[in-house]
Amino acid sequence: MQIMLTMAAYMLVVIGIGFAFAQRANKSSEDYFLGGRSLGPWVTAMSAEASDMSGWLLMGLPGVAYWCGVADAAWTAIGLAAGTYINWLITSKRLRRYSEKAGNAITLPEFFSNRFHEKNKVVMTIAALFILVFFTVYAASCLVTCGKLFSTLFGFDYIPMMIVGAVFVLVYTIIGGFLAESASDFMQAVVMITALMVIVVTGTVAAGGPGVVLENAQAIPGFLEFFGAASPVTVDGVQQAAQGVPQFGAPEQYGVLDVISPLAWGLGYFGMPQVLLRFMAIRRESELTRSRRIATVWVLISLTVAVLIGLIGRSLYPTALTTASDAENVFILLSTNLLPPVLAGLVMAGILAATISSSDSYLLIAASAFAKNIYQGLFHKTASDRRVLWVSRITLLAIAFVAIFIALDENSVIFTIVSFAWAGFGATFGPLMLFSLFWKRTNRAGAIAGMVSGGGMVFVWNLLVRPLGGAWDVYELLPAFLFSCLCIVVVSLMTAPPDRQIQEEFDAVRASR
Image 1 (cartoon, rainbow, N blue to C red):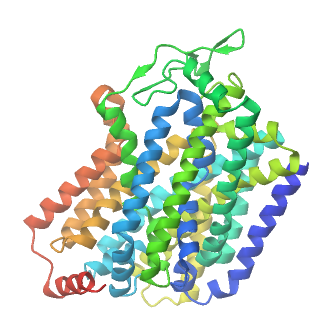
Image 2: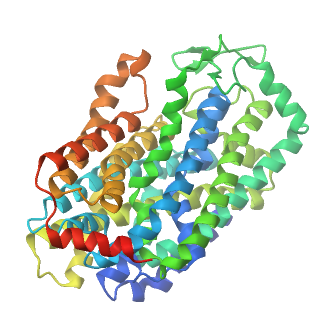
Image 3: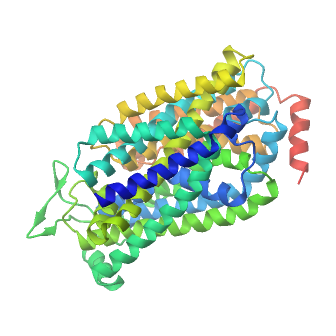
C-alpha cells in the first residue's frame, strides 16, 4: 500500500506539471509542439536523454545483463554512449540553426520538407508516415513496461494495468504539450538516475560487496566475457535449475559482427526525433555545448549502472527470473525486496518516470506528424492552430489504441520491441539528417530514396534476412543505415542538383557560427 501511495503521489506531481504548462502550450502549435524554442541547457539535455532512454534503461538493459551476461548489454551501452556524444557534437548546432533558417520548422518532417523547398510535400508525408509507424511501436514498448511494473508490484492482471498506464500517459500528454513534457522529463531524468544509483549501492551491499558479485558472475560460463555470452539452459523458454543453481550451457562465442551489431545502436541517435527536437527547441545555439556535456555524463552513469544491476540481480536472486521476459523485472525485484516500502515506491517511480518521459514524447511527436504535417500540410493548409491542436489530440487517442493492441502480449520483451523501433528511426532519418546538414549536393529525390530504402530495409532485414542466422544475424539498423546512405548518394548524383536558392541557403547556414 505504501508503494502504491508513493507512486500515486508522484503521478499527481507529473499531472500538476502538465496543468501548469497547459495555458502556454495552447497558445499556438509552435508552443505545443516545440515549446516556442525556449528550453534552457539543463532541461534540453536531461529531457532529451530521459525521453530517449525510456523504461528499457531500468528494465530492458538490466534484463539483458541478468539473462546472458555483460557482452550484449555492455556493447549496446558503449554504442549508445558514443552515439550520444557524437550526435550532440556534430548535429545539434547545425540542426538548431538550419531548422530556424528553413522556414522556422517545428517538426522533423517539416524541416526535411523545408530543407528541399518542396511544394507537393512528398518528403514531409513520407517522414510523417514513418514517424507514425515507428512511434506507435515505441509507445507500445512503454505500455508493456507500465503493465509489467504494475502487475508485478500489485498482483493485478497485466492487461488492465497496461491500460491504466496508457490512460495516465495519454491524459498527461494531451494537457501539457512539449513544455510540460520537457519540464517533467527533466525531473524524471533526476529520478531515474537516483533510482539506479540507490539500487546498485543497496544491491551490492546486500550481495556481500563487489567481490562477491564479481565472483558469482565469473562462476557462470561466458557471463563476464566481452567477446562471448552466457547461454541459459532452457526448456520451452524457461531456464532450468538444479538444486537451486541456474543451469548454463557452453558460452556463445562472439565474432566481429556480434560486436559491431550492438555497437550499431549508436547510429540510431542521428535519426531519433525525440532527441533531434530538443536540439531545435533550445533557446540559444551557444548553450548546446553545455547541454552536450550534461547529456554525456548522464548517459555514461545511467548505462553503466543499469548493466551492473543485471549482474547484481543474478548474484542475489539467481533462479527468481526464469525467462528472458521475466528477467526484465530484475530492477523491480531488487527494489521491492531490499528497500523500505516508501523508498521502494520512490525507486519504482523511476521506472514510471522513464516510461512517462518516453511515451509522452513518442505520442506527441507522432501526433504532430499527422496533425501538422499531413492534416495541415497536405489537406487543410489554411487550418487554424486551434483546429490543428484538436486534430493532434484525436490522433493521440488513435495512436494510443493501436499501441495498446500491440502491447496486449504480456510476454513481450521490451528490449526487442525498442530495438526494432530504434532501428526504424535510425535508418529512416539518420542518414538523411547527416546528409541534409553536411552535403550540399543532397537533393529531394535522394531524400525520398534514403527514407524509403532505410525504413523498408529495417522490415526486410528483421523479418526475412536476419532469421537466416550466421553472418546474416546482424542488428537491422546497421545494414539499413548503410543502404540508406548509399541510396541518398547514388540517387542524388543521378538526378539534377538542388536549385541555386537551396544551395545558397545551405551555404548561409554553414557559414554562420
